[in-house]
Length: 190
Image 1 (tube, rainbow, N blue to C red):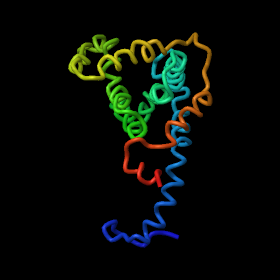
Image 2: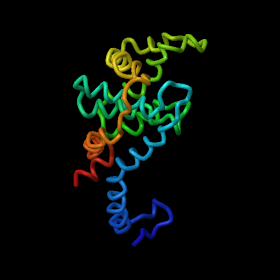
Image 3: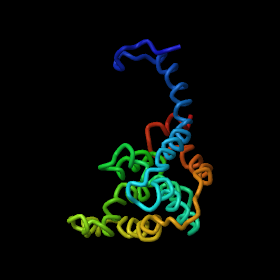
Image 4: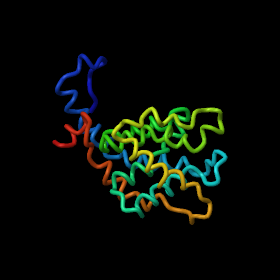
């Protein structure tokens, strides 16, 4: 069965009775699509000492080992997922994926992590390494600076034994099982 409208403005309750169950099936497969997309980071070194997937896994592993909660670890895991589709704004892509499922502070941290990481290298590119200072008075400055210093920055280590994405699959599935703040929360609450 399919909806009958050709313009959403002409949709009916009957159409949505067909669409919603199909969308819920699709919605529940989001963790599978995210895991598949993370696999695209395998073998992509971009000039770094480890590929993008191992960097992401090292970041998440460090966060998990330090006792961060599942939501934070998931943010650490996905912080660079946007590299493949949003090469010029990867942090925005990651933040958009995470936003319905994470706290405002974790969303902000991921959305701005690239500028904060820039403190470590922007000056080599002729850019202002202190660009992050524009956010110094925000509530999440220290949290984001800590994320970079403790987890993101040291996670380019080729001597770390190769990590597996499957290690983080249960955590990712838990975090993505229920949106915290989205119109889809209404659908999943029913």
